[in-house]
Image (cartoon, rainbow over all chains, first blue to last red; front, side, top):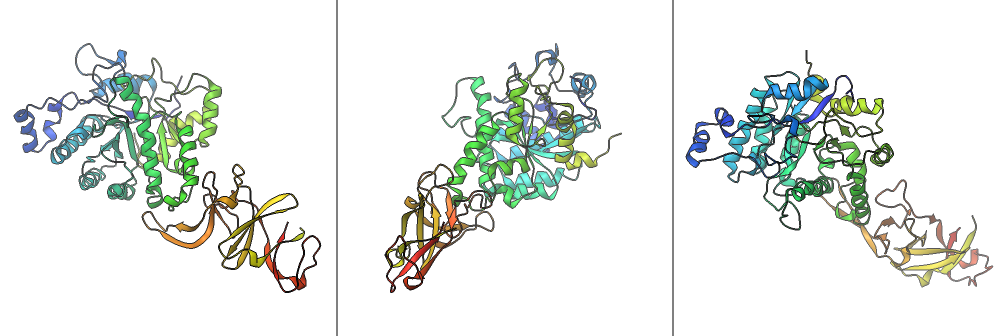
Length: 356
Length: 132
């Protein structure tokens, strides 16, 4: 399909070619630790470099690291598909580091790498502030450090962290985000502080990847029931690479449960489904629905809002082959909302920034 | 609406409830501190008998982490799926505007003012009167 004019890609993943790439952005103490400790890199089990899911096969170069240069992004996504703007979110496992000071230093270095290698290289790109969530004070400080650069249009955490995200010890982070009008993106992936399923550790990659969906559900339940959107009503949360089709069935269960135990969370003055329509946005790759317009239409009816979905390619992850896709049965008006308008109303900074 | 004498008031003590049948409808009477209220005994969800549900207080909150608790005994929870209803109004707590159980006007009147047609009335006693 042809994407509407002005399409915004909400989920692009530049790959850090190696730990050395971050060295120039590290303070000397941590830069020297790379060699001293023999650190090899932060590639994670969430996206193993050689897994088919991690990089679409025609986007793998014959030599070198895929998705690691601006030329690759231009030639694979921006130019052939006429994508007007893109939000880059590296998934390099800085969140997995156990030493909170080291994690903080490498996270800041990653954000500076994003700024210099991607945002400075192409004016069509905006970035995500990766947050060092081990320590809420570090996360707030990183927001304050990066937020003055208007090209950072959101912050990002992995869906599987140490504790449910809605807990009050994280509220200073939400307060800082609201102050700067930054949405919080929650991306698939784990810090591996807990098993990726509540049953324990699974055996296979297919289980690990599928488990993200459960994590997104528990994450949403945490944010909603803890009252994050009561306290911070303007906070927008964007679920990236979360899948979409699970959402109505999950909300059915959560809302049903809430009706019976409302007294536990008396601050929650609206149904969870209303909170989701107001505060939650989702990227469309993967969508997880059959290639059947009628099914998709019913799903959109269940969501009850045409403002929740944001178009994404999930580059370089292998979600589809060939040209970009939208779920079947999406008409031109809704396509324009998904590809352009919803992102502009979600990302205030993207809307106010002009690109020539 | 027709007025129906449904019970001698003295037989339902404060905090108690009683189910009566009026015009084929099951209605539950609640005595809240001497005031009487009448609700349909069918939960609007799946028809659960509200008369068999616990009466609790109302938990409210000005913001996450802060609780206020009051109106003890004035909220009935359906015994089937625990939906809460305000005994005074019939309105649910989770969606007071759209989800409610039918409430009927109820009051207490002296026997001497009532014409006993289907219910033996003594002039000295007080009776619960429901409009259905």
